[in-house]
Length: 233
Image 1 (cartoon, rainbow, N blue to C red):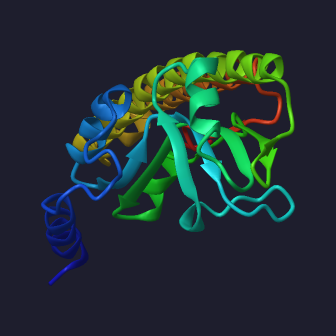
Image 2: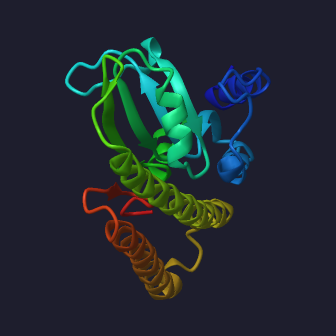
Image 3: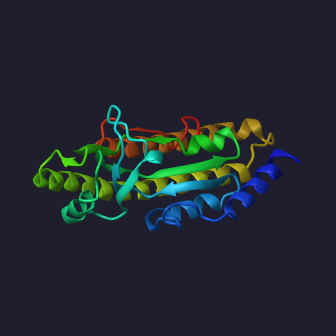
């Protein structure tokens, strides 16, 4: 069996399995993105999260919370209010941490060049300890302040998902056009100038899209590193 057929078989097998996430379904804000990827033969998603605010209870080692060995006191994919956090904290007996986690998308790709299209990294998160051994270490006013930040990050995260979707869709459309029009050797000399001019325009356009996307994201997060299109894409 060749690699293409093997990948297709593996994709069909994985997508036919039941959703084992806590929620049991794809988050609404990322459903269109997941559908776009799974609709292409070179990709399939294995897990996803549109972004969430969570309150975890676990032992803390250097502020590193291991989610596999903790209790989820609160989880929401929507804006959160202070009262919900205060109620959840009353259940805590150990150390608790409030976290905001942005979009997470795990994708299997058929080959390296497909994976390069999806290469995106971000530090758009939040993680703050609130309790130690069941004792609240901060004021309710501070919790309200943290939630305003977390909710702002949630809204920004939605905008980033939309921008990523649009950039990805554009990249895949360009790839499809390129694959459907392979380079030929007929009239190579006569057409070399027009092709070179076209490539320069496309390269400039791609660079502009990437740079604009980078700048827009970096306004809110100076530590972000983004690569939507490879340099020679």
